[in-house]
Amino acid sequence: MSLNIQPISFREACAFIKTHHRHHKPPTGWMFGVACNDGVKVVGVATVGRPVSRMIQSAEPYTLEVNRLCTDGTPHVASKLYAACWRAAKALGYRRLITYILASEPGTSLAAAGWRVVGQRGGGSWSVPSRPRVDTHPTEQKTLWEITPTAAADRTEGV
Image (cartoon, one colour):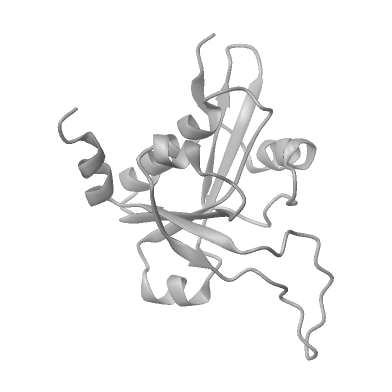
């Protein structure tokens, strides 16, 4: 079976995420998205948008974030999608692509695609007395990963 990258509409990506994602709803917007098919059907999607962190958004205008990556469990799809997201972001002139995964997730697909760990981040609830919210997402700590032209070049050195 060969895996192929293909374009996907926002509506189609959201429908796939709604059906297959373990713990998040579809994003509310995006800059772009990519899908992966097995020659017959879509087996994974990734959505890329502005960083959720306002501090990163304002300080790093050439940074995007993979907000959702979702597969149906087909092997190697996640790493193929992460690599495709980076190629697309880089082609659009972005210099850094980030994503967050749960601390309990190993990040094997990210490492395979040439990404590196930046460190542990936050977690917890966004609910505060002045703006109460109901948590519908995991509140455990997250791991921040990134890929940059330098990191990508380091990965291919000596190959």
